[in-house]
Image (tube, rainbow, N blue to C red; front, side):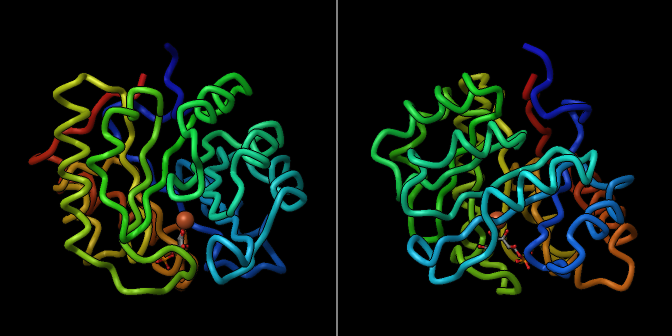
Length: 239
Ligand SMILES: O=C(CO)[C@@H](O)[C@H](O)COP(=O)(O)O
Ligand SMILES: [Fe+2]
């Protein structure tokens, strides 16, 4: 298989700034501001149903696709992913993560996403254990583990949720799965190392990037922290 993370060396970390913390009147400009330093652009889709917040949907993703060279990492926090997820793949998303709490047949949807040319991502919210879903992971390219409760940016990182990252990484390593483990929520200079040590190799950061005076420098700094911490937990090849 080719490297589905796109231009990211399999042994490197993925930094995915989240547009949720960007200025929504300048999304294209904000995306281009981190293009040289980020790997993916994280797009949080919320529907007022799965989470009590409303953000952006397909029309914005379609407009963003030609506005940046970064692969789009769509995080669907929506009540009916089977209805919509493939549309995001067709709109040009590189990775589409949907929540296991909202989907009765995650494996079928993963197959549909891959058939549509996207990476398939399984997302797990704060209160959902990872263990029941370990047997499904061979059908996925990415596992998004929330390190906050899904719904809003700017929340405090919850370190105990890294136990799920450790469990998933052990499972992926022992089964030789090509799985990116992405952490999302409260990732910043003082938290990213712990997540990397736990076995995460993809990092979403909203406030820490777009809330910074210099978003590009913030991405570079986060990458340095993650790489420095990687020694104790080598990342797994997704290719
Ligand atoms: O999915 C979400 C929120 O539900 C995230 O992607 C947030 O955008 C992360 O924001 P910060 O915690 O980094 O500010
Ligand atoms: Fe997200």
